[in-house]
Image (cartoon, rainbow, N blue to C red; front, top):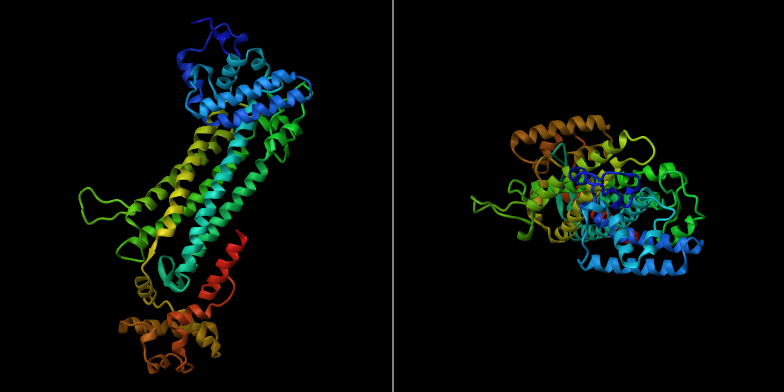
Length: 461
């Protein structure tokens, strides 16, 4: 074994350096290098605070801030060499800073630990990520609103149990998707509010002896306040878990949308057409047009659900305070960020391009006796108790099924076999348009209510 452990920034206590295998196990810079912007922002704020309270000289603060600006510029330009022997993003940047500005770089770490440093970096990273995801959700939301408005009058079947249930409009269905993504946005914003407290100042676990000003650093970094307990702070990854849960639920919603688009694009449904740029072909069947984008989003949902589970399992057995296990919080978090971003971006592009095959949707809505409930409601308005109306319409449906037609195609005399309350005005109630128009209240599928819902959603943006 080499006696070069003291070359490590933490190596004064050690007589031996880690083996190559241990270094490979220990390093995280191969994935946490993406935190460099947050790490540099946090370090600059920490340095300014140390200068404010008199721990660092103004000259040291100026050298640190400018030195870190130069390092960030080099990393941005791809001119920085990351060293796995230095383990992580923090030590790589600190070592480079010291090489550039001398002893002032060694003073930067005064009053902090990598434990509260990484907690700060991660909170900044997740906060930045949430802001990016919210912007992407807004783009998806706008696409849904535009598509819903375009198809506010387009009739399609609504389903329960994957059986035709009642007529709805395509616009109403898109507004159902919109409600899901709006909840996703508010969930991310709720998580952002909870995470936006400064961890820095907790040090390793117990705080620091230096006269730090945590509120000053919080203001520098845009945090709403500071964390209350140093033990909790350095070991807390709730904010990462909350983000991964929110990401999982967003992708569950996108996966459900994907499932519907896959079905609707098939010849058996024929409700929509997806432009070629969102599809691929078959290597053997030349006629195929496969809805690969929705299928891939549906598939990628599984990996993000797995990332959430990985983080939950990572945290479940850890005692206070910080443990090295938490190095493994980043790969699942980063993978969830990348996957969610890609899926939201592709949906933001695809939704406005969806082509609705209105005639096919309408023809499907005319099948499956989708206005049977409207006939029951008609009889109730005529004075028949609902349970009796339900039975009468069930018998009517059975009769129409044997005859091979829809109930709207039965003659008045045939309808009156099952209830003498049926009159000529029944046909206005059991057409597709009549069914839609009758559901004219807040949140329902009548076209004017769909437009009102779209207007409210646009006003809330």
